[in-house]
Length: 448
Image (cartoon, rainbow, N blue to C red; front, side, top):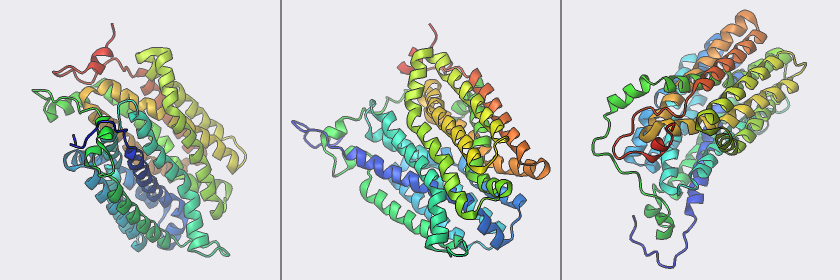
């Protein structure tokens, strides 16, 4: 804790600036991530990549993104969130810029795999940063601001990318995309975001020259370390032998198989099924993702309400099961809709329901994780991103063999399986037994 005087001081509000800048970083991270599918037709045509190979390029990012979340997040815990996040932003911006140099499928695979590594620790590190700056009463609210920044970035990326690729850097008359110029532009803007982050952010209020001691004193100290902490292999074994954790990971895997369609395969679907104009695909993709953002904004309130109504056991599982089953219905309905915009509305509603469920998914990990919430979240998120990695490959194979309607049926079935996993979750069963000193949250969550 800092040694600045606190008598008579009102806390400064530097935390809001720190969270806002972190949200901007999340916004650019998602723009760099989502723009790739929007630019897909131009990239494929110029480089001569068929759709089968392209599906592997799309899935490559999510594979390394899943694998490296826990390792990069651990580096942030050890060396500080400021330095690790700044390096991450610079690294993923350089990867984005390097995409403009790709001359074939191998180069694209390499840069997408590297991008997944560079972005992997962003949210775990951001969560640790919020923990160091926010009081317990505002931690959830400030965390949602960072997550919302990412969702906004994903929502505006298609329209902004279409504008940049055609109107700003391409040829509006012929609607020719300058996809290489877009990646260079986004890479440069990412470096600016990294500089801004480094200048504004510190690891804690006590280390920030703009924050006073009163603001530093608002942050509760970290929980005491047990005298005999559980060794890492034992913690990993606890995750691997937990039925709850496999259901938790299965839920996220099956959700992402279907949800990732929005940011990987939707532009191809609109072009193949409805002959959508290249200039219209970006706004359509943005519309669907923007509807989802509303669900993210309301998800925390919804999750808390369900918890109060149904209690710790059913307040987590029942809403997740119901929301996933309704998502399955949206995909079934979409196969019968007559035009592109009605499909976009249906898929937007699906995105709304998925984002509405996200705070409940994270709250479940907090319920059962005890002192190892990060490991529990990382385990589920890792399996979830494996689902996102598999999504474009699975859907391309099904589309090629059986058509888009069957691919949509696969997405619906995946949501049904997610609903089954959600229904079987039990937030009253912790991953591990409480360690000394006992964790009050775990103790209070047990059934009487």
